[in-house]
Image (cartoon, rainbow, N blue to C red; front, side):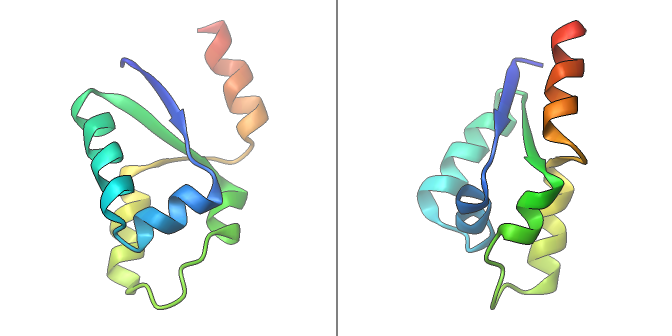
Length: 79
Protein backbone atom coordinates (compact mmCIF):
# COMPACT_ATOMS: atom_id res chain seq x y z
CA UNK A 1 0.00 0.00 0.00
CA UNK A 2 1.56 3.27 -1.14
CA UNK A 3 -0.64 5.68 0.78
CA UNK A 4 -4.17 6.84 1.31
CA UNK A 5 -6.39 9.37 -0.42
CA UNK A 6 -9.53 10.62 1.30
CA UNK A 7 -12.36 11.74 -0.97
CA UNK A 8 -14.85 14.39 0.02
CA UNK A 9 -18.42 14.48 -1.25
CA UNK A 10 -17.52 16.66 -4.23
CA UNK A 11 -14.82 14.25 -5.39
CA UNK A 12 -17.16 11.29 -4.92
CA UNK A 13 -19.89 13.09 -6.87
CA UNK A 14 -17.49 13.72 -9.74
CA UNK A 15 -16.42 10.07 -9.77
CA UNK A 16 -20.03 8.90 -9.70
CA UNK A 17 -20.77 11.08 -12.73
CA UNK A 18 -17.67 9.68 -14.52
CA UNK A 19 -15.89 13.03 -14.63
CA UNK A 20 -12.82 12.52 -16.84
CA UNK A 21 -10.30 14.21 -14.56
CA UNK A 22 -11.50 12.52 -11.38
CA UNK A 23 -11.71 9.13 -13.09
CA UNK A 24 -8.15 9.56 -14.39
CA UNK A 25 -6.85 10.59 -10.96
CA UNK A 26 -8.44 7.61 -9.29
CA UNK A 27 -7.25 5.25 -12.02
CA UNK A 28 -3.70 6.34 -11.20
CA UNK A 29 -4.38 5.85 -7.48
CA UNK A 30 -5.69 2.33 -8.00
CA UNK A 31 -2.81 1.50 -10.34
CA UNK A 32 -0.30 2.75 -7.75
CA UNK A 33 -1.99 0.71 -5.01
CA UNK A 34 -3.19 3.79 -3.13
CA UNK A 35 -6.09 3.19 -0.79
CA UNK A 36 -9.04 5.49 -1.55
CA UNK A 37 -11.21 6.16 1.48
CA UNK A 38 -14.50 7.91 2.05
CA UNK A 39 -16.36 8.58 5.28
CA UNK A 40 -19.74 6.94 5.58
CA UNK A 41 -21.30 10.40 5.74
CA UNK A 42 -19.69 11.26 2.40
CA UNK A 43 -21.96 8.74 0.70
CA UNK A 44 -25.00 10.59 2.06
CA UNK A 45 -23.60 14.00 1.10
CA UNK A 46 -22.63 13.05 -2.45
CA UNK A 47 -24.84 14.00 -5.36
CA UNK A 48 -25.85 10.72 -6.95
CA UNK A 49 -29.02 11.98 -8.56
CA UNK A 50 -29.37 10.47 -12.06
CA UNK A 51 -26.60 7.94 -11.35
CA UNK A 52 -27.54 4.40 -12.34
CA UNK A 53 -27.70 2.11 -9.28
CA UNK A 54 -25.20 -0.27 -10.89
CA UNK A 55 -22.71 2.61 -11.27
CA UNK A 56 -23.21 3.57 -7.62
CA UNK A 57 -22.62 -0.02 -6.50
CA UNK A 58 -19.52 -0.36 -8.67
CA UNK A 59 -17.98 2.91 -7.47
CA UNK A 60 -18.63 2.12 -3.81
CA UNK A 61 -17.16 -1.36 -4.22
CA UNK A 62 -13.83 0.20 -5.26
CA UNK A 63 -13.59 2.50 -2.23
CA UNK A 64 -13.02 1.91 1.46
CA UNK A 65 -15.92 3.33 3.46
CA UNK A 66 -14.85 4.16 7.00
CA UNK A 67 -17.70 4.42 9.52
CA UNK A 68 -15.82 7.12 11.43
CA UNK A 69 -13.03 8.66 9.43
CA UNK A 70 -11.47 10.31 12.47
CA UNK A 71 -11.19 6.97 14.28
CA UNK A 72 -10.00 5.20 11.13
CA UNK A 73 -7.21 7.72 10.55
CA UNK A 74 -6.16 7.43 14.18
CA UNK A 75 -5.91 3.67 13.88
CA UNK A 76 -3.87 3.96 10.66
CA UNK A 77 -1.26 6.07 12.46
CA UNK A 78 -0.65 3.33 15.01
CA UNK A 79 -0.09 0.62 12.39
